Amino acid sequence: MIEKNVFDFKKEIDFNYVCDLVDLHNFESSISSDHLTNYVLKGVFKIKNIQLHDDFKSLYAYCEKEFNPEKKHSNMFMFFSMKSGGASITHKDPECVYIIGVKGKTWYKVGDKEGMVEKGDLLKIPAQVTHTAIGLTPRIVLSYGIF
Image (cartoon, rainbow, N blue to C red; front, side):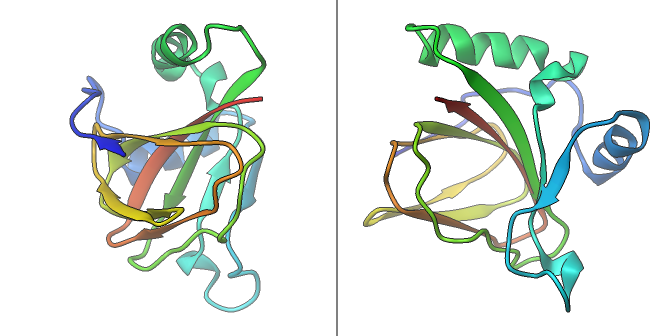
């Protein structure tokens, strides 16, 4: 389910990096959890279409080559949470999704399987499979989706 140490990031991507990314660019963003009123900073945040940033173009090109041979539409989002326990909403995606660990430890339940994604790891989530993620530490992951 999870391939360990697939990616090696040359640049350190941490929360200072995320702050600069949000400050210097006009990416769409949203909250991807149910923490909308109280404890907002315990939520999971999403930055959309991160593949447009120069730092992610080569990783996106790699994903396109390896995972998208039919040249369907695709995108790459960044998800992050600043507090341990930040959880995504349990859901299904209509498309196949590949999760790339960037920082921290994220526990995933995909269907009836479970596993830990850490920096450099790759997790494939098939289309229409129920899954959820819980950050065991503050965390950053990338999500490459094909639709």
